[in-house]
Image (tube, rainbow, N blue to C red; front, side, top):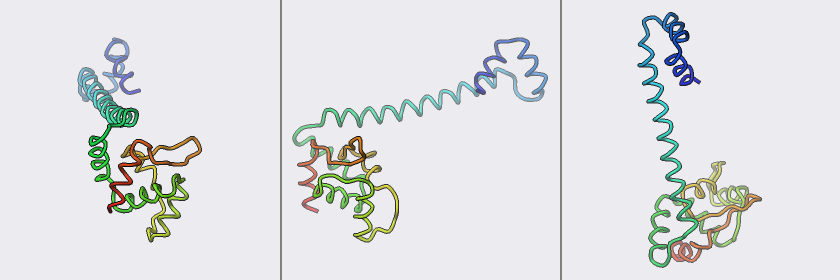
Length: 154
């Protein structure tokens, strides 16, 4: 909205005079336009970087790596998880599917007293989980065998 006001003020002489008379002593309209454009650029850059990270994750999910490359990807993503999250992924491998409620109950049973989401952060940072339309999380079939190998050793 502020950018729109700045653009109108910069292009319209009548509005420019009105703004200039109201905001006397404040830097000129070109400075405000520059500030507005800089803020717009910052917002667009943040959106672009977030979308680029999402595209990378989706590409890895849609065309999973094969063979030894898949194991390297899984090891790198496992490093992002803490010990409790690794235990939860291991339990999910055993059970097959889980909801957030099941995950919270399991975490309470092993002594974690925090009440929060457990599966959604794992799903957001790795390609190990897939969520169906009713909210049940399952292990991504592309990573099932690699996760069983990596988590079976721990």
